[in-house]
Image 1 (cartoon, helix red, strand yellow):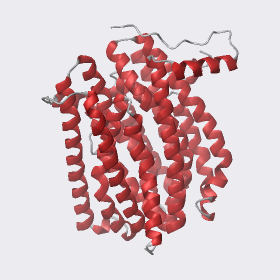
Image 2 (cartoon, one colour; image 1 turned 90 degrees about the horizontal axis):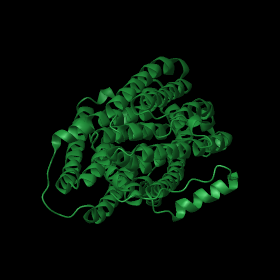
Image 3 (cartoon, helix red, strand yellow; image 1 turned 135 degrees about the horizontal axis):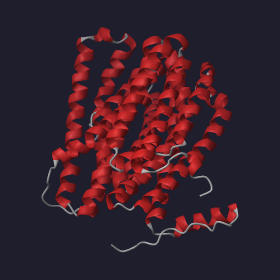
Length: 461
């Protein structure tokens, strides 16, 4: 294999300004793997940052359009859809990131073709089955949910297969560094389509309601998924030529099922607070909590952007057993995760009252939630995109155990704290679980991989 020159490190005696300048030039002009990874991380970060801004605007517009109570109904319904869509692919979305680079290294074109086609078909079929069964259950036993949630939830089930397909395409895109094709449609186009739908409904004189908001989200999800499908299909011929397909289902299952546990628990960590709070609080409190939590969670976009870009290199270096390159990628990933996250947290907390006021006058009650959540998010950021590293380096089973422990802890803590503390209890439960993920993943990385993740090991290096 041809050796690739590494992106040069700044001289140890250089000033901060010189170090930043040299690193920037190396990243912008370098054609080695490190420079490409950082550039991909920058693209992913810009897309997620733009997405965060658009999602925030969308949520503000929805909250002001339908009011706090209907916004709370919408939040519950959309959270349930994301939960189902994120689970229905059974881990194949993340398995794409792990297996496609591996197959590429082995020149296993038939396996690549089989995974891309078969994985997508299975994910969509399973999501369709799951959403159909869920809709029948809600229809047959409507008393299971409070009346305001039933009709919006039945409408929302229509887009669960497209949410799942987008997740799989996201995985394919990240496995090949196709950040624009994989991330732009679901994270940028979808909220733009939602905003466009609201404008059309308002112009058509449709009354604001939770049902109308859900319809806008359903149509936007289908439109963005179709665009993403077209972009991925356009790039697939460059990845692998047409030909026979081989389906190594056993290998897919071995890799995907632990990742399914991780992904499912990750989705639970993102949704448990809202779902359990919905059982104990009024819809307007749910909407207020969601606004505060998602405002603070903007800093997590850094974590996922860096992880999305670095995952491919984690998998490649682990497959090649190139420890030096893996350590360099880990060091960069931790630094590029923590410092922007810290800066973002300071800015968001400082602007918290103003940001919440955009949703409406009642939403300022959610400000204390932000102080609790920021502690957990920063604790996780201090370990970098740890789950991406463990999953790509073959430690997905240990990572799955970590996420399962965190998910159970989150549910138990939420059930105990929410009845007593309401919104604040939901925030405390989430912060505890998120911190637990980062700390346990750091321990596993140190013991299984011999890699120290905490940011304090990478300062000044």
